[in-house]
Length: 135
Image (tube, rainbow, N blue to C red):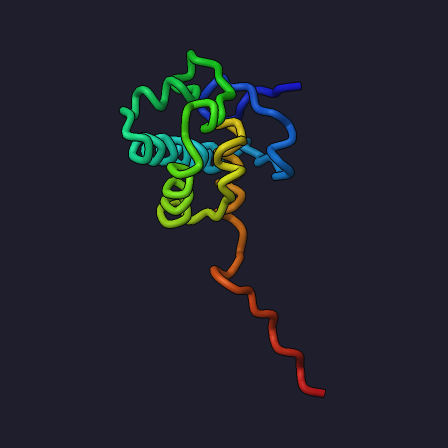
């Protein structure tokens, strides 16, 4: 069953988030981070699709009076546009998410997925395990 979105909107988010863990947003810092990601992602989607930020915001569940669990695929983002958007999310939001996640995850859940991806302490590129201690 959908649950209220902890972001600054009334969207209903699924519990699954494609396997991602739900953020705890009891702290003002967490809510502020999600709000920042929300604004940045709307800007990136608008830039990638050529639509106005206000059109994107309304379609994806902003302002708070609009309830939506729209995915970017439902919004009309194609796989070709998604490739560029994924690159921008990686560079500007410093989060690595798949094209599938970008296209099919409801917007509210996508914000949380990006927030979790930003927190991961993962090396970019190939992960090289630490060298074994000499015996």
